[in-house]
Image 1 (cartoon, rainbow, N blue to C red):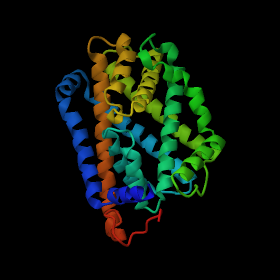
Image 2: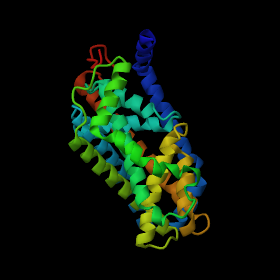
Image 3: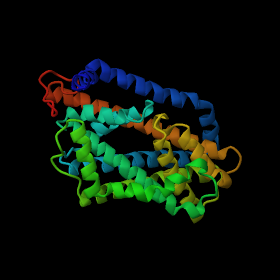
Image 4: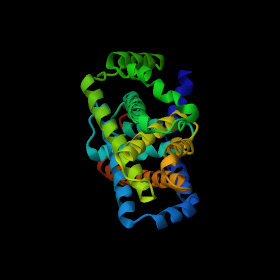
Length: 327
């Protein structure tokens, strides 16, 4: 088993696999945007330039919040990254979301993070914690908005809200640190040098909740631009609906980046407040904007990584002399 894992790790670390991963992920993201071009044109005709600009800006702010939340976890576990390096690692790794399976962004973060002297087991732990925080905080934000969500809008996925308290218990540092330690022992890895602290959890949760509020605001701006009445109720509906839709989409791991599932849930939540086909259009535009934002961030990460290669003698390319933190 150990020999198999070692061979698998060697393959994943090869430059050909890294670049192949990048090409396939980018290709799938681009295909999604191109495939939706007719609906995008229809939505663009209904939205003002000011609304579209606000939606794009809010998309960047939302993704930035998720980046900072992950960076806070990583720092708490013992690896502090500059913003430049954080963009490089996070931006490139997030393209893994567009591959089926739900784990490729974690694998990519571990491999790219190793180029910045982050032990792979620490990268995996930090990404897992950041995602768990997102799931719990997203479900909690959605639960707070339940009074504004139409009955049955979540369909068979309503249970997500009710299991949130049980998942939240797992996030408590004394519990989570033991679970991570057990997983690392089973995987034959060294324990974390520094466990997750209450302060680290609070910081990550704060940034995660801020991200839900920003993403919900983006959805609300889009929906009101397409005909939804601006009000406190519809704002709560958009924020809670987006958080719940993302959480459900994440749990369906076979869907790349929750594609399809997230749209169904969010469109169902918004349907009672938007006319005609406006609900699916709002969901589609939001998805495409966030896909473009991920692409821009990945491009920035690639440029920063290539710049780092010139400064550090080829780390990103997996140079033979590069120090492997897991060796």
